[in-house]
Structures are given as C-alpha cells and as structure tokens.
Length: 189
Image (cartoon, rainbow, N blue to C red; front, side, top):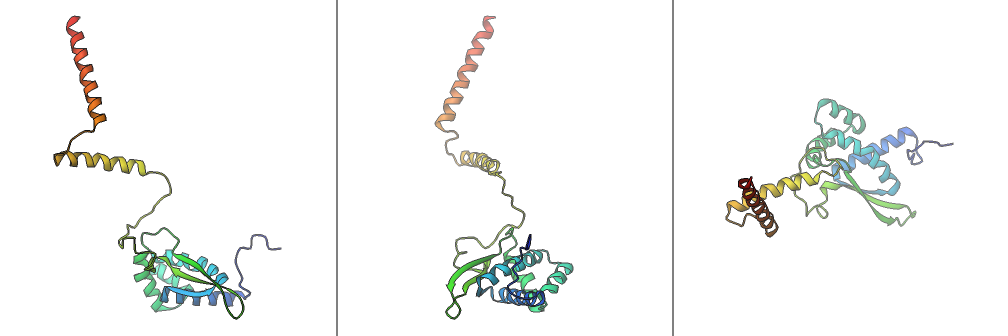
C-alpha cells in the first residue's frame, strides 16, 4: 500500500533521483528555463522552490544548506545574487511549467519549466522594482483606498479645484439650515 506517499519516484532509486533533481535544478538556475518531461518538471518544482526561498536570506548558513543540495559554487553565486534580487518581492511560485506536447521518439509528455521573473514575454507589463515583504490574502484594501482619497482631496483644493461635490454641498447646506434653526429656537426660550 502507498498511503501518504506523495513523492514521485520517477522510476529511480533515491540516490539516482536526488542526483537527477540536483542536476536539473543547477541547469534551471543557470539557464533560467529548461525543457524536460512533464513528470520531471513537476518533481523539480517541489525540489527547487524551497531552495529559491532560502536564497532570499543571504547568510552563510542558507548558502551552506543550498550548497548541500546543489554542490555547484557558480550556480550558488548566481542564485543568491541575480535570482534572489528578482524574486525578492514574490511570496512563492517562482517557477512556471508550460506543456509542450508529446515527444517524437517515445511519446513522453514534454514541458518547459522556467523561472517566472526571467521571462521577458510575460513580464513586460510589470515594473522592475518590486517591494519586498510579506503579502497576505486578506482584504485590507479599503483602508488604503480611503487614505488615498483623503490625501487627494487636500491636493485638489490646493490647486484651486472645487473643494466639494454636489452631494457634499447639499449636506453642508442642510447642516447650515439646521444650525440657523437651532439659533432661532434658543432666543425664544
């Protein structure tokens, strides 16, 4: 029975599989994209993404941990310098797998796996400078938009633009009438 066995063995022994994934990860980091079978690409994604996450923190300890997996000094330097700069603001999902179809010789499903931030075709619309930090999935945008509109109103009045919209004018007039009404009642007492 294979209860809870989620690793794809790729029909290889543990040592062969670790060597294969290590070599694929080295080539992916060096070349930014590689073409392989779909099963290997999916296995490589789970292998390389934690290593890229470790590269965000450029310490000797993290370098040694990643070196224990990859064992290639030039690739480690590339990962901790060039790759880490580009993925600093991304909270995961550093790779993209694109299916390419079946291979001619053995009809194996092939796929291209690439580093997301190094693709010029998909990344043209986005800015290069990305803010680093944690992003959450919670809805907190209302506060930010309210602060932006409040900041925009004083800027508009400084330029000589009308200070209030028609609705705001109506509310101010109503308030003025209420104040006048209360003033008239006070002397009557």
